[in-house]
Length: 176
Image (cartoon, rainbow, N blue to C red; front, side, top):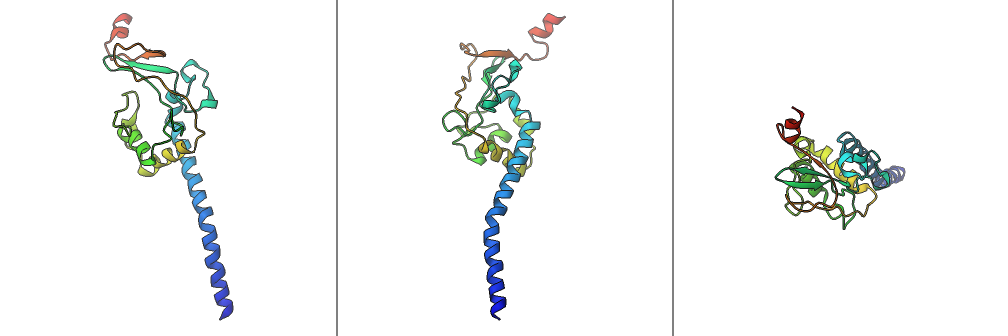
């Protein structure tokens, strides 16, 4: 009888010790999945300085762009800092708030994200995939990088900009 009790106690103790290790592996797996999704989703393109100039600054990976997108009638929007920096990034956001921004296009302060943010496409992510992205973003090294804007139409812009024109806009007319 005592051997069985000792064995049961050992199995119980081993499972309690193994649970935190299993949770850490699950977290690593979720972060790895999030990294994969951020990579194929092209988040680096709009959220890493230097990317649009052909020289991404990977020491500030996802720390916010240095290029704004002008959308006529809406203003200029610069890809934000999506690292866990508490002052200039999303470090004070909960995972659920990050997921809401990714899938609904709404920041915790209620502001709707710029139309260049492809949240409509990300709206169809599974709940697990969206949470994996949030876990990955929260695992990054915080980058202190305050992004300018957004700028309303007609406001002075302090960054390089790309202008997005609707079909039939000035660029299309000039090409004819």
